[in-house]
Length: 248
Image (tube, rainbow, N blue to C red; front, side):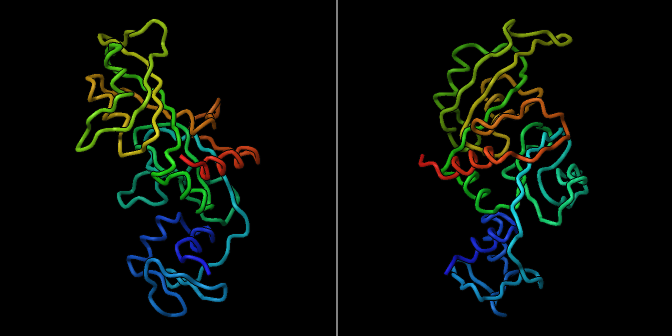
C-alpha cells in the first residue's frame, strides 16, 4: 500500500504538497469515491484527478533553468503573466514538469524543474532546510554589525528568521550607481519564506536593487545564460536526491 499523495507525486502529476491540496479540494477520486487526505491505496486502485486517470510517468526529467526577472514560478498564472514554463517551449516531452520551490517575479537565477514529485517534496520540505545562495545588490554600504544580524536572526513580519550568512563580495565596498552607492552581498540561508531575502535586507536598512539565486546546496548556476535551460547530469541528480535524504 502507498499513501495517495505519494502515489500522485510519483506519477509525475505534481509535488506531494500540491497533491495534498488536490485531495483536500475534493478533486481526486479512488475507485469512483472522493478521496480523503491520509488514505492509502493499492496497486490496482484507479486514481482520477479532475476526470482524468493518472498513469505512472515513463521517466523522470530534471531541468536547470536560469529564470529571468519578469516571470512567475508557476505552471499557469490567472493574471496572464509570463510563467517559467514558457521558457521550456523547445523541450520535446509530454511529461508535466513543475518548479521545485519558487523565485519571486522580480528575482532571477537558478530554478529546478522536474516531474519527480518525491524529489520536489524532499527539497522543499521545511525540515530539510537545504542551503540556497543568492547575490544581492543593495543600496548603501551595510556595516559589519548589520551583516552580523543575519547570523543572529532578524525579525521580519511576525517571526524571527533562522540563522543565515551575509558577506560583502565586491572588494571596493559600495560602488556608485548614479547618486547612490550600491554594495554586492552573498547571502546564504536555509529557509524559503516569501520574499525573505528582500525583507531581511530591508530590515537592516539596505533594500535590494537586484537579486539572483546562484546555487542550491553545491549545485551552481554557473554560466548558464539568462532564460536558458539544460538537463541536469546524472551526478547532479544524484547529489540533489542525497540532499533530500540528508538528516538535518
